[in-house]
Image (cartoon, rainbow, N blue to C red; front, side, top):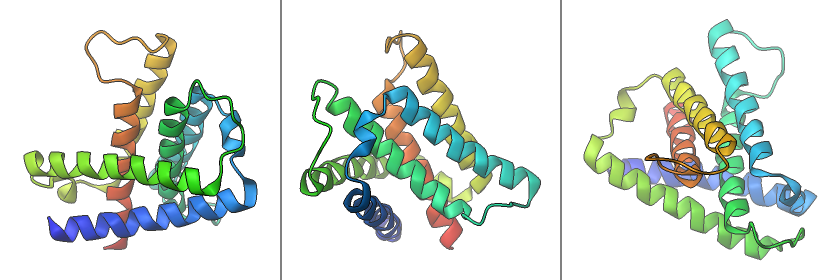
Length: 178
């Protein structure tokens, strides 16, 4: 488990570093996004990965790794937006966003550690393409929950799906680095 935690933290740090650099360039312009728009951004990234996996080629130079990083970062944006849904501020400071990023990344890592305990790191034996499919499934679940105005009968909510997508994307980043 120690190896996984180290690899997880390394991947999460790469994601956070890019996120904070973009915050310094663009500020918190993403505050204008509704949850449905965030979900669509993640969908576009996951669908691009799947298309590249299926076709075996790509025409845009951005690599798959950068798309998984984007999935992590947009998922964290989704969690932040949900937490700040009654906060109308458009401009958040880099320091505040840094703390929020850490909060949600830590929550996702804790969930990963609990699930790894129970599942025995089964993700290490999965294909990266299966992780892509799981992300796409989680996106479709979120879209259905959004269509249901946030209501679920028995299922986990939107936040749980964002956490799972963070973890699947970080697992993919780990697998791609090995």
